Length: 210
Image (cartoon, rainbow, N blue to C red; front, side):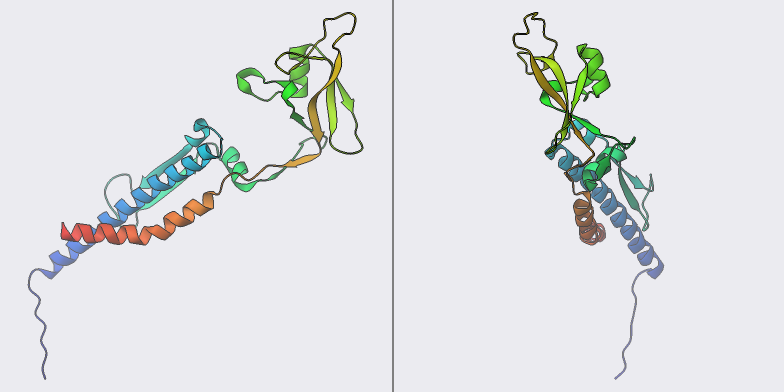
């Protein structure tokens, strides 16, 4: 038995068309994967209650910037990597000076722009000195000898009689604190990577049929 093979059409042109279809498929898939991962990470951040501003720090870009390539790539990153990374890793935080971390309690209120105040800032804004209270069990405290306002904030007492005067806990003092892990960025990245071959195949077939 003798078999023969006959190729109809221009083989070089067919191979070139196949390569172009592959380049387009890979490039489209990478752009989709990058945009999808950016959306997923932003969704995680907002769902964790970390705010739209931090979510918007997630950006994506695809390469090459123009044209298609079999070596196309996508990059997804944050413009606030330290903050996002901390919520993703849940690190142990210690004071840089080796002393206490001051954690504001509700009576501390908020600083300018809603920021958390340091003990020094609090004393300047409230005009009160904070007093250290050591506790054998539980975190130590910084308290203000004043009163609680109608909004639950520690403020100076104006009553000469001392009526309503109280020692108001304003800050908790702890040697270290572990930030709760609120994000799992690797999970979404792994899913995007696993879906990539299917995306490429889909676009490759669509390009050949088109």
